[in-house]
Amino acid sequence: IGYLIFTLRISSKGIEITPPEKPIKQKLDQSLDSAVVLGKELTKLRQIPPEKRSLQQKQRIQQIAENQQKILDEFNNFINRPDVKAQLEQISRTARRQNLDLESLNAIRDNLARLPEKSVILYPLVLENSLELVLVTPDSPPIHRTVAVKKENLHQTILNFRKALENPSLDVKKPARQLYDWLIKPIEKDLTQAATQTIVYAPDGQLRYIPLAALFDGKQWLVQRYSINHITAASLTNFNTPPSSDLRILAAAFTKGSYTVEVANRKEIFSGLPFAAKEVENLATIVPGTKKILDNAFNPQTTVPQMDDFTIVHMATHAAFVVGKPEDSFILFGNGERVTLKDIATWSLPRVDLVVLSACETGLGGKLGNGEEILGFGYQMQKTGARSAIASLWAVDDGGTQALMSAFYAPLPSGKLTKAEVLRQAQIALITGSSSQLGQQQDRIDSIPKSTVVSLSHPYYWAPFILIGNGL
Image 1 (cartoon, one colour):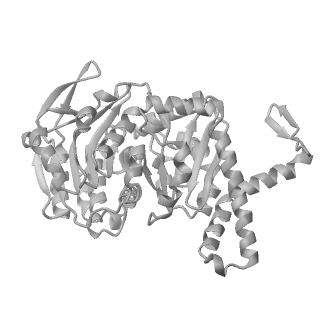
Image 2: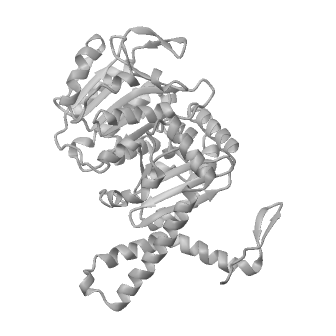
Image 3: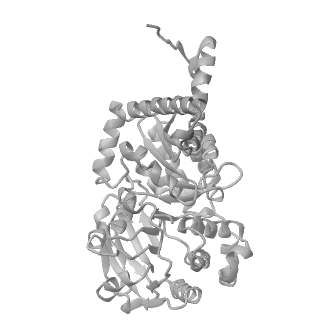
């Protein structure tokens, strides 16, 4: 029996591999890097009927299958590590089993393969002394990468990023670049080899408070390269169910007046949204036949029973994700009534493709929780039967929101693009100010104060909106 021994030296630069072992380490790295390429080769080989395969093709299938077994064995060893198991159990408890199960990821590769755009699942797991990246592609077993970053450093960068995202006068690119280097750079080659178009994202902990779309690679935002949609455990029941071809929209808005609402033991005043009425009117122009409900008529008693008659439910109103108390999170209806996550659990919306909340926020109060309130909203909305939801991670500029929503809805009637791609293009329209992409909504952007328009390319305006669930 032979033994392979790595001699490690610890220096000021960290762990070093002695020169004789470098070729072995490089060979192992190359093996990992080629997992996607080998998986694609195996997929093509399996398309050849078994009786028509040459001896060489059969041998190659066996080689690649054995390689994949080793990768999966290593992945299973990883998720069975005591520190990883402890973290996963803690996430399952705090997330109330609404998060993805790492053990099930290999089983949903076929679902990924059926999506119209080339998609991967990214699951970052935050440990005390490392960030563990898990990437699932249609063609390979889960790929695992370890990033050496302490949780406290990651959390501080997330907080810095979040603060910069909420203030258009701040430079957001420095923390955005650092998070890119931790979350995306280690899997860049895998994403390229998989010809990735869409990242299906399952963030852990405080990563739920920041948009992956706003990471910066030094030249462009991540959304300029990929569509992104978030996923919960509930998403897996309709992961690749196509949307209805019959576009019917219910558009409700809170436009005037104000209400005092108790939020997490403090009183907050929520006022009507001046641009919300224009947002609804514009939506009705884009999609004729849109049903409009405003202010007092927008109440739970009459609005909720109507929702399942529509494929899209759009609510231009306040919503709050309450950190630390997800059950206190709510949607404010136009008559001042609150609907909490617990109330949403009683809704039945099996015919609804998308629920949009265009003016919600997460009230962090300077302190980050674990993001369970955001995960809980997405989970509960999908448990109603609705296939997906769009919500925002912070209080958004009213005029900028109207511009983004106009850009989002304009291409939907054609049915040619997925919801994830439509959201991506709308965000890019604000980043670039492209009149060709903004189309009819350019005149609405022109009505926003010029000081605001100049800054529409800042992620504050376009990045807070995340798509949760089925991105088709």
